[in-house]
Length: 183
Figure (spheres, rainbow, N blue to C red):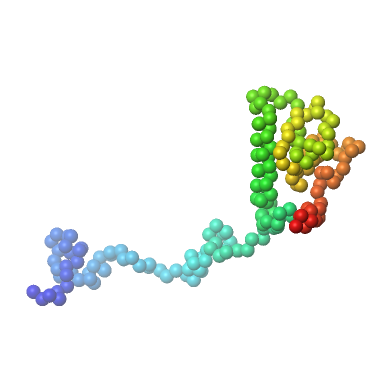
């Protein structure tokens, strides 16, 4: 036997009664599926597979510039224009958690709240006296009031005689000048 004889193909070995006379040409004529494409892809389809489709943002693979990102006026961090700044939100969330903790420590959570709750911060304890202690349940907080937290949150309307808009709305210039003075 010649050592360079063509080996029997798998198809020939698996089908009983076949002879070794069949060649590769006969196998190709029999209709075996080969792992190659029958038609060439167009240039458009190749580009769409490579880069994605421009009109459909989910399938686009090209990075695009974000036009919806702005700077926060208070802290200077970036955020989407339709969303709250995450840094400012985190500060408010921490302050609210501290206020709720103080409320839970100073009141019984199982008792009903018969009065409105008024939070008195550390810097307000000496300077201001609350005349309406009968109307409010006062909760003392151990740290000073943050600048962004307005003192006039309990005001029912703006038509009162002692209304001062500077208590409600803070000017961003005041924040900048206060931070520069502290440095």
